[in-house]
Length: 522
Image 1: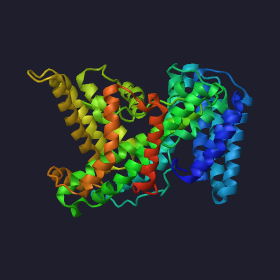
Image 2: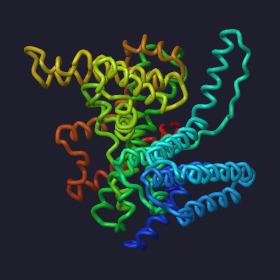
Image 3: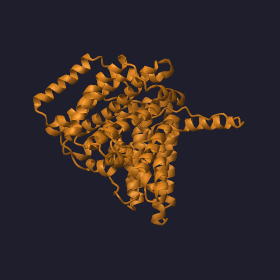
Image 4: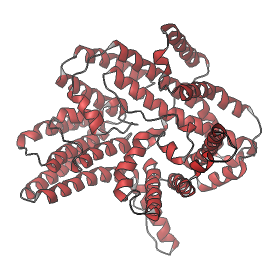
């Protein structure tokens, strides 16, 4: 189920009025959110509901243990009821998988119960470390199995063959569950924050399960922290006119960015990146620019739609993008691009590695490792790792050379010119990075980077600039005025005309039938 598909609008048309009827009824609101979120996620493949349920149950129990809270058998009732409901759904819609999934689930729950029993008399500090490890192992184990096992198994077989060993690659050929990278990171941060004593666990399983599976941001973020979003599930929500209006406008802007802009420049990037050697060198830059616009409008469009839907329901999600292509330095770019992931990597990986506390060399090492793993988070491919390595390298180079301050202090150069120069340089570096990210192989990336700097005007460039022009105008206005949502303060007649413009664009500008969001693959 995708936000711009008719089936989602039908789903929301049923869900939203029911939700509105339950105002001031906290438990029922959360129960409806949980049910709606599981229907939303199970629409792709009901079998994968067991993965998110296992993560939810394990992290709920681990959070209580890590905090030192005492609990008895009663705490298991709601988690086991949810597991039973999911297994019943699998029995109805995917009966062929039931025996295997039910057996693995029962084994996992039995191991968790054994761990609780065997560690009951263990010193608290040791026990909390053990259950933090169990939480991380469960989440990363699920993620690694479904996302990375086949890739590394294949690479190992190739390396073994290169040194004369004949090894048959053991691959599982598993389907990648939608959104697995997002919700595993979200639930992991919950137990880590409890371990660090930055957050107290909830004893309300329904609230926690609704927080983990919240459908607006479940499959492509933002990767919310429990301390921001979970308390919102502890308060009854009412549908208010001002939040409904601003949420709908935010959703509309995200819808426009995705369906009108991203999906209409996608054919340009798809054609050129599919075989760069078959395209005239003068058009290669058009492909790189098209993907630069596509991935931003696709991903930020999803985030805006997610935030808009959540706001209409009475929730406030974090801002995930702040006009990243206006950045002047790599560090500023990562403060503006996919903020929920970059801040997650900073707080739970970079700082854990030592951050900048061990001197220059260790700081550069930590930056590089963080970005390498950030690249790997995006997918099991060497091109993603290269993209992460590239961003790690420019972060280190800028830090060593103090480039931003040097540009600002250029003698005889006005500050505005220096800042503009820094912005252009950073944008070019960002485009280079996207070539690695999108290319099917290193050979394709090398060909594009070697030949795309002598563009020849063609209809591909016209297509990219035509669809990107409204984005450029609006974001330039936002940058100059400092407004994140400029339409919220506009008179009603102006907003009405903007809505007509979006409708006109959708109906008449050859809008495609809609592609899946790019980050669904991550």
